[in-house]
Length: 260
Image (cartoon, rainbow, N blue to C red; front, side, top):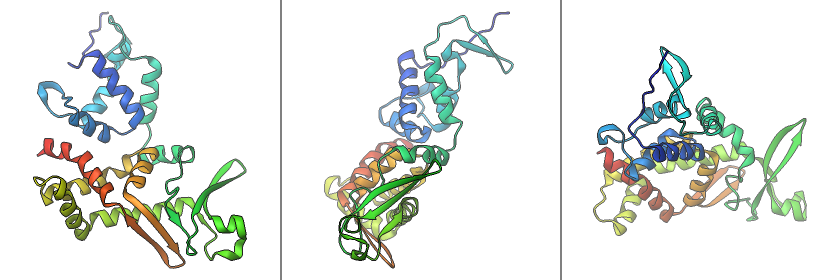
């Protein structure tokens, strides 16, 4: 029996690039945005979207196989994607974004490193312990480590809890009407053509994409956006970097214009 293989119209180098970039980024939504910004299109010059990418990343023709009535067979063409790359990409797709983050978090830099400070003004530094094979992460006030526990009311915070609280507050701040107007005013100083609607849409899009980001990308964005986090017994306060917000707008804007 001869089974034909149905190819996408993208060339082999572009297909390999897409597989490799997905392996690095881990999010079809983010990858689609970056591909569109780079001018990569699907059939007929249409913008690349998440659905198109998932279909491409599931096409077994790229590993030298063909599919007939749901069953794959060895094809009569040469593979352009290695089996190792295929398996790694498929393992990422098989997991939810939140599950991926849970697997990766312990292997990535602490989200709030260098940003978080205790009530006494001392920095809080990441630390961890292992109990029965399980990793427990914390932020510990440096004065407690160096001078003793009596030096600060807030001695140690569970990393997962404080990171989640910071992210929730950060996302709420970026969605607020006051921040949208303030950001638009600053961005207009660099680009007078940008509209308040574009700024609002970019910040809303950023909020929607957050859960799909790998922990390393989340850490990069937090370091870009946040200048300082102060902790006290009543809660946290966040000081943002305005220039960081404008950088996020610049990253998102090309995709917004293509979608317009």
